[in-house]
Amino acid sequence: MKLNIEITDGQMGVTGPFNVETDDGREEFVNFWKQFITQQVKKIMDNIGDKEFSVIVAKADNVQLGALPAKVNLDIELDAKKDDKDETKTKITIGAVTVSPDLDDAKFLFLLGYVDAAITKK
Image (cartoon, rainbow, N blue to C red):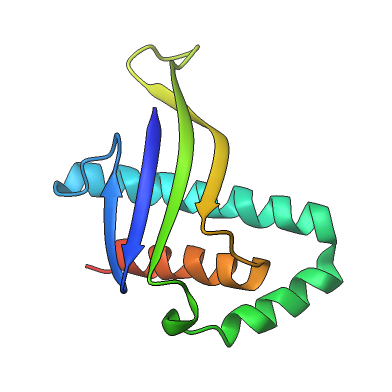
């Protein structure tokens, strides 16, 4: 299963297993997104360390939407399995994450924040 987030000239489209047109689907997507951001930030920090991460965060604060390419795709491979303890629930795990075109770490963090702001506002 794949989740695709496409940003074209500042407009965001979401294609995948979350129905963001309904309140329940939007809430489920927001919950997923919060976990996803936490995981991605942790991966970056684990790879480069706290000091370098703080430098990237400072750079990301200075990135503006116009610095991103006109079209950016964020593809997230997902795997859904029934919860071992509660079969009425589904556990989603994240597989591969790809961004095209490639972005540097500061632009990637900006992208995550941009999507976060877009999906969490009402």
